[in-house]
Structures are given as structure tokens and as C-alpha cells.
Length: 172
Image (tube, rainbow, N blue to C red):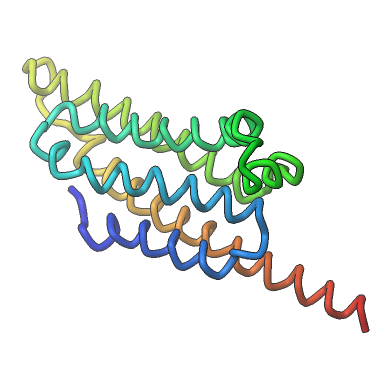
């Protein structure tokens, strides 16, 4: 089951966080990657909802795309160093605790969707009488993981604000 509000909330949270954390290039680059994966997810969601079994593979691939964006950020920044943004992003690149949490959330979603895909496929083949995990665990787990991911994205903003406050106190 999908809740359209939660699907759009990811895009909105990433966008607002991106604007608020614009001063920190590392946060800006990370949130841009989050935003790109959210856009791909939103653009393909309606198609995926028409595929009852393949929906879970699609969901795994969107989480996997995010993982690729996170781990590939440094590589792409290196490849596009001719552009000043990417040069600065490469020089200041560092992995943050927020990224680690987002990666854990993504891996939990990938595993959960894989279990659901197998279970729904077995149910479709009449090898199972009930898709228990899908009905009672997966949907709630996905909602919790989405909300946690949004909170983590907002934490970039709080981190940047705290860092700027500390820097202004050092100047005084």
C-alpha cells in the first residue's frame, strides 16, 4: 500500500533541506542526490503501481539507485572536476553520519522489498496461502523507514545551522 502524501513528502523534504543547507557543499551535493532519486521514483511510481509483483523489484531498484548515488558521489565529482561545483565537492567530500543512516535505511528497504517480492511471487504461484510479511510487516516498515529518512534529511539543515553558529561564536 502506498500513501501519496509520503511519496511526495520525500521530494518536498529534500527540496526544502537543499535550500536550507545550500551553504555546505557536501550537504548540497548529498541532498541533490537524494532529490534526484526522489524525482526518478516519483516519475516512475505510477508505472510501478500497475505491476503487482514487479512493484517490489522497482522499489528495490529505487533504493539501490540512491545507494549508487551516495557511493558514486565522489567518483562523479572527480570525473566532472572541470565544473567548479564538482571540483569543490570533490575537494570537500566527506561521508557524514546522516549518509550512513540513509544507507542503512536503504539497505533495510532493499531487504524488506526482496522478502516481499519472493513472498508475493510464491503467493501468486499458489505456493503460499497468505502473504503475511507483505500484509502485516512490509507496508508499516516502509512507512517508518520513509519517515526516518525524511528526518535524517532535515538533520542536514540542523547540522549546518549548528556549524554556522559555532563558527560565528569563534569569530567573536
